[in-house]
Length: 187
Image 1 (cartoon, rainbow, N blue to C red):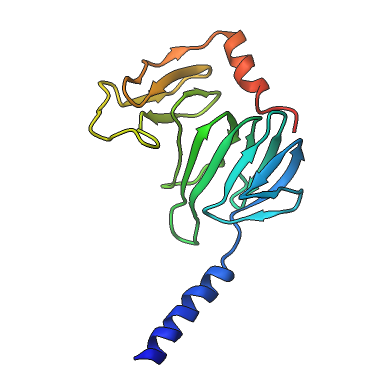
Image 2 (cartoon, rainbow, N blue to C red):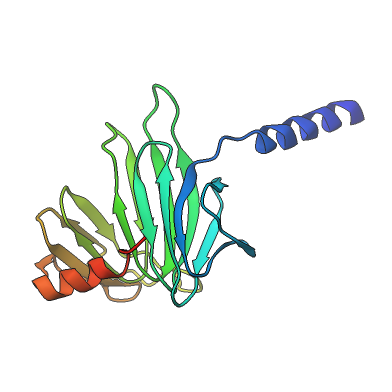
């Protein structure tokens, strides 16, 4: 029995150690960390990685499916899940606890790309389904009146909170869109 447990434990440890990275760091500007370690160009990150940028920090990532993401200054992002296997739909879950990201997500039939955030969302092209989800210590008992909004047109946006839900989809002004794009640019 002890040998069986030891073997199973080693197999789990080895499979984790040999897990394929889900993304690569393409660019870093200013302060950017994963865990407590400074990020560098070429670093490979796995699911579970927590990235933090300083006041003037930016990071550009390329995921294994070709999607790219820029994490803006003063941001905190966790790659909760990234699964992509031949013949199976992609399943991605990111948690943006604070800050701003810009993303270009590659098309994946039947797959999903989920970003949970307590703030606002703007779409440039394609379709995005946004849902107000409590983060941190917020309780799930607080069910917002409007918890899901679909953004389908260019420049559409919404603002969400865990308690109030998401505002209706609206067209953002060119100035507001530009401000949201400036945050994750320059890397």
